[in-house]
Image 1 (cartoon, rainbow, N blue to C red):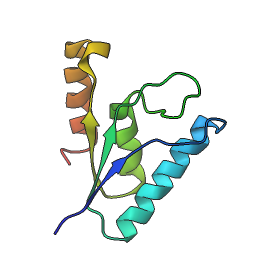
Image 2 (tube, rainbow, N blue to C red; image 1 turned 90 degrees about the vertical axis):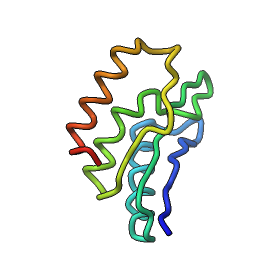
Image 3 (tube, rainbow, N blue to C red; image 1 turned 45 degrees about the horizontal axis):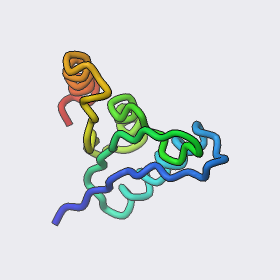
Length: 101
């Protein structure tokens, strides 16, 4: 059986965003030690108090690969917020960065 982790950004409203990303990367490394095979990163837009802070999951995935050997993917991308051509281009580039994993 394979296990995956869906990355849910849930920092405290007063948290530093850089620290919250670092904590999520740490969570991914720990999950890998427990045998998780892959991680999925969803797109989350939010206003104040800004408790969900991953507006661009395709930018987060290479960071995951730099810290763990997980397969990483985007859980979803909200197309109404993005130009479809640019989404396709970013995903193709992400595929190259992660060597297709």
